[in-house]
Length: 478
Image (cartoon, rainbow, N blue to C red; front, side):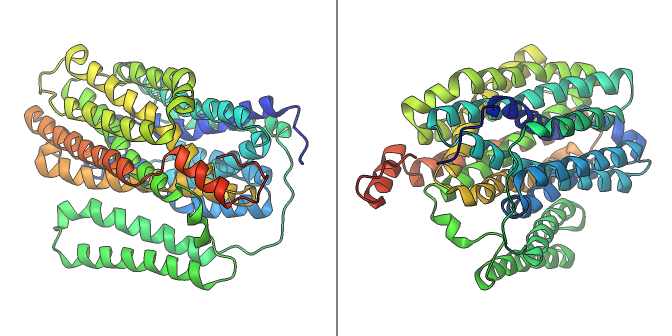
């Protein structure tokens, strides 16, 4: 039996800070997008690449990050991830052209892909000795995500309004250095022998990137164009190649046997659709506030604070307690359906809308749905994984959320542009485009809720199966 780490709660502060920063990296740029668009020359449809360059690389390399964490040691990979994240932040802050900015965001994505699964692995190692402590630690760790979102939208508004958009990246440098200095609190996990499936990592990342690129470009060149068709075929071929590689090599990036973990498949499907609905909502709501209602960067950031504060408070104080009482499945399904309701409400925003009447109540309903679903889906995906696959399971669940985010944003951007969101200055057309994106996100969230109800096993069913499969007299926790 492993010794309980006496510094585990201080170590959790470091890990939560990492989660805070990784999520802030996706939210802090939101209110800065219009200023970055002006300075760097992005078109309305290309603007999403500031977000997707990070998310595609982050999502595509998470499995590799998880594998490296399991082999080399989670603490070493955590440190390496922060070094890369700081380097990407320097490049993004110094960018003078759109492509350099995209490159900086991609480097940040590499850093995030190393940080996220290693942090989750360290958390599991620190707290898996006690299910109650693990649940509390997961709740605090999960709450760092909306806290990062809250800080991101606020700081993004402050920096963009009174300093410059470059500061949304400069801020990572001192915070990253401080986090590196605090890594001495983390347990030193020994490395173990094994190989790294670089070819598999390249195949899955390239496949995801090509799929998103095809969807982004399709509205301009045509869905039936030769280029779009070939790109989608190429993306599918790369993803098929990834699974072929996983079946054929001795030490794959993602051993397919991991999918035997109870609820890993259904929880990851829920996370995919959650990301595909939530991130586009956040993205287009930012644009609606600034490009239709005329909010400044600080006003837009402040307008999103109630939503993100609700997320943080609800995840910390309520969701974990509800999960202990009703289990993961009802919360995941119910959360996705509540999110869908909030998105439908947001789709009714008019060109002359009011924040207090048209945006605030609908955004709070959507945030309530997200706060109900996110942590239960994360716990459901990882709870049955053995320690040696903790990094892999974490990488998978983070991958599916970010892949869903990237593909959802790409697809719904195409929908929005086709309905008028590319016509800057035409407020009715912009509003029609954004409303279409909200409706599309609502459909994805509702689909996730229904599928969860139909296919996910309940906590009692999983516990009963685990008890039946365990040797007689052995205690099983799920």
